[in-house]
Image (tube, rainbow, N blue to C red; front, side, top):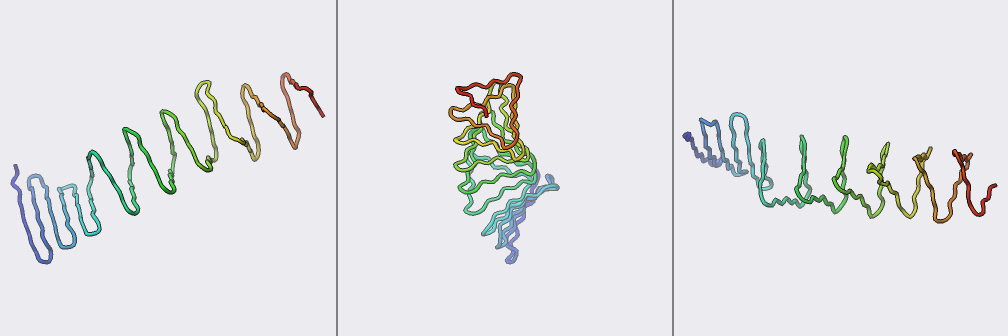
Length: 201
């Protein structure tokens, strides 16, 4: 084991300094108590980590910060901020929840995705709005249906509404009205009009 150099300095103005040096490992550990803060510093030729404790704050500066515990609880009485200059990941092997008692805002400067290997439910107690320059809803499962359901269903195209498919069916359990303020065209390879009675004109 390398021989360590240990020093203790006491000064009425500078306070107390405890230093342990390992010349072979090129490592220095320093504890400084200067009447304003307690500072712990560990450094070598390439890296330095510090812990500074003041009456109103504790600041930790290091290259890698690791916490391991059975249970971790972080709580602040005022605002909290978590920011990463690189990639930020959240992962859980069990259920995960994100809850706000007020407004919740999520924003991405580039693409954003929400995926699930099971079901996804979007629910609003009031209005639910989906908006985009181009919007697409698609059911890709073989034989699966895309269902839009509500007490009143409106399709409103400010320019055109286009529907097409191998089979197109419009049915009403009550009255059915087809109306155009311009020309109305009905065309088919075979066109059948049935009813009892049938009124034209």
